[in-house]
Every structure is written in structure tokens, then in C-alpha cells.
Length: 408
Ligand code: ADP
Image 1 (cartoon, protein in one colour):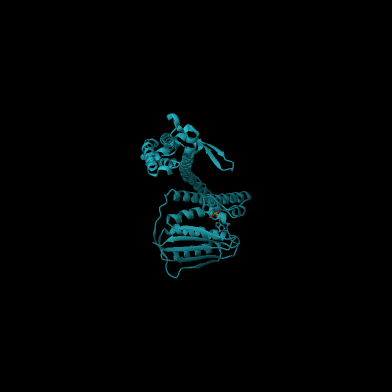
Image 2 (tube, rainbow, N blue to C red):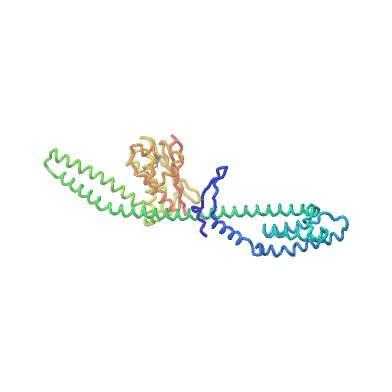
């Protein structure tokens, strides 16, 4: 079956809806499928064969009725219509047309005696007598033809849908492959970059220490010192950037092992909050759960998630505004909330901030530095713990990040 959606011509009907003009091959293919779908006893050939006894029975019954009713018998075709209807219902247009012809011939032979033994349908009276039957029969055949066409159209639509689904699956596969190639590239590139940068940084730090031991000082030495400081600083930034890149690619590739143990999420959160307070000087209010919140987690990785969330909350909210952390638990899960009083994140960007390298236009135009990796890494970590991470936010109402982790 090769009904690829791209191969048929795309047209538009008068109402502007897409219609597809099928090629001859595709039509034949479709007919074959249609035929394959109906059960064996409903094949047209069987319809033609069955028409003969069926018509014979109706004609015979009609003859009997005429005999019984004698003078009252009008329009003998009414019973014959039944046989046509029956054939049309089960065997379609061809056999039903055949049944009409057969009925007409037999009716004219048995019921409309003509002078000189001619076939009487050709006489005026014969035509009038048989007209209601022939017209009803033809309408039945027409309705059947329409039904068949609709069925074929549905089949065509189904086939088209199948072709689209296949294409989509193929495209998805390719995307997945491209994604893996990208992750592999990121992982190799960051590994390769890391060694020379660490060496450069080490050399700069060594030179700085040597300079510090020098007794004499001059303007030249001063400028060398400044340059070395800058090299040290920038290579430091590069190193942490490469670490983040390596982190995201190794977590993605499933290479990063999780070392899960039972931890109290109250304790982890408090430790991270204290560290971040010391580091940033920002008030961090923490409202822990009254009982220990024990979960089977990789403590370092969950701390990493909280560091990302709290440092973001600090980074994207006004100086001195507090960051609030709340820990809750119910029977099955723990929820950690990190709330800030910043500008908030527009609804349409709330999903995207968890993508790698995505930064909101606001963040990009601000002086706040970032790569857009922290939340992507956090999401990977949380999901590898079978948890969920999401944000709720409204303009000028700040943002609250939620981390939900299963307790069992
Ligand atoms: P970045 O290094 O840019 O901070 P993240 O992955 O940590 O990368 O965050 C992605 C983006 O999400 C940020 O660039 C910022 O636009 C937005 N964001 C994250 N946290 C907050 C927050 N607390 N308030 C407002 N925006 C945020």
C-alpha cells in the first residue's frame, strides 16, 4: 500500500475545504480495500447469482397472489421492489440493477400479455404498468450508489489519515535521532573544551601566584596582573558553563547515575536556603513541614534543583524582596514551593522556560546573565525521580515554582 499523502494532488472545493484528487492507481487500491473489507457472502458475484432465485420467488409469489385475489390485483411490481431492495442492501449497485432488469423482464412476460405474443413492455400500457417499479428500483440503486461513494470517501479519508500518521511517526523518529546527535555532540564538545580551559585557568592562577610573590611593582606588571585576573574570571565562567552543558547532556543520555537514599526534604531545603542566603544576602523565608518529609532521592541532585530555583528567584526579583520556600506533604507526595516577588512569567512562556537554552525576552533584555539551562536540568532531575516541576505565575504577582516528588 503506497498511499502517501504527499503523492496525491491537494485541491480546494468551493467552500475552501481541502480535497484530495486521487490518482487512478489510488482509486483502484481503494476499491480493492473496500472489496477486502466486506464479508465473502456479500461479494457482487454472489449478489448476481442470488438475484435469480430471489426474483423468481417474488415473481412466483406475485403470481400466486394474482391467482388468489383474482380481479383486484393492480401494479404487480410492488412485491418485486422488495427483492431489489434486499439485493441492493447486501450486494450493492451492480446486482441491484441486474435484479431490476430481471424483474422487469419477468413482470412484463407474466403480467402484461401483449397482442401477438410480443414482449409487452414496449407497449404503452406495459410501460405505464411497470413504470412505478422501474422508477423505485432505479432510485434504490441510486441511493445504494451514493452510499457506496460515501463509504469509499470515508475509506480514502482513513487511508489519508493513516499516511499522515506514518509520516508523523517517521518525522518524530528523525527528530529524536537529531536530538540524540545534538546531545552527543554537546557531550563530546564540552569534554574536549574542558581540558584546555582547565589548563589555561590553572596557568593563569599559577602566574597570578608568582606575580603576588614579586617584590617590585610597575605599571606593566600591574596591567599583566589585571589581564591574568580577567583570564581567571572568564575561564571560571566558561568552566561552569561547560559543566552545565555536560550535566544536561549526561542527564539526558541517562548516563548520570542517581544515588538515591532516604533524605529529609525539610533538611535539604533548609541547608540550601541557608547557603543561598549567605551567598546572596537576600532574605529567604522557609516554612518547613511539621514532620520530617522522608523521600528516596539523590540528595545532591535535589539540592541542585533547589539551588537553581532559589538562585533564579533571587536573580529575577527586586533587590531585598524576600524569597519564600514552603514544604508540604500528603500521603503519597511532597511538594516544595519556591516563591518570589518578581515580574512574573507570561502564561505562554511558562512551558517554554523548561526547554534547553530558552530565556524569556525579559530575561534576554535584562543584564541578568544566564544560559537557559538551569530549569532544563532541574526538569530532567525531577522527572528522573518520577516527579513533576511546574510554575504558576501572573504578571507583577511574582512566580511560584513547584516541585512534586513521590514519597515512596
Ligand atoms: P537562566 O540561566 O537564563 O536563568 P533557567 O533555565 O534557570 O536559565 O531559566 C530559564 C528562563 O526562565 C530564564 O531565562 C528566565 O527568563 C525564566 N525564569 C526562571 N526563573 C524565573 C523567575 N523566578 N522569575 C521570572 N523568570 C524566571
